Length: 181
Image (cartoon, rainbow, N blue to C red; front, side, top):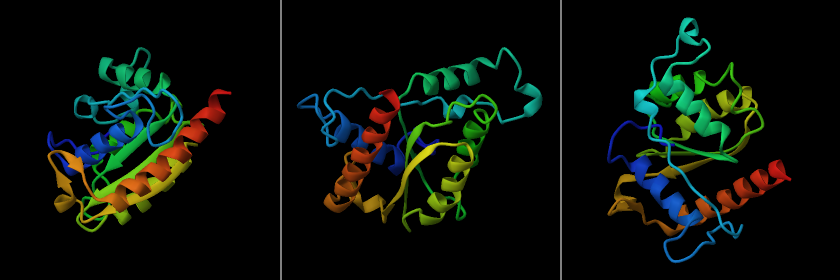
């Protein structure tokens, strides 16, 4: 999932590049060499309501139920976030808060990637403890510095960044494989 709500964000481009590393267009085996991997991008973050414990009831609001169901069906999660004001976006925090009580991130392998002009290091540093508090099994954070000029035709083109993401994906797939054994 992308932490950005922009339709054509650089974080979305990084996420699209990650998808191609996992499931390349020319074959079923990605950078992680894990055999066939499926990939699904959650695009409903914008539709999630602001988190309010008073609304966290059974049944959950439909958008929240869809978010939780998507997570429950996943073996691993990739979060790519921009950095806003030295942190990550509020919409991403709301999305995560909706899962604290229901526990979808407990023991979930999560790759955290931050991407911005300065690399998003602060966003990754701010988000990592939140994911750990939710008991996620964290890989990263991986920071993509100076991302805008590295994106061409909606894809990340920097070889060093793609190599770092590929290495992180190997670790993510390994964690996910351990969890399903």
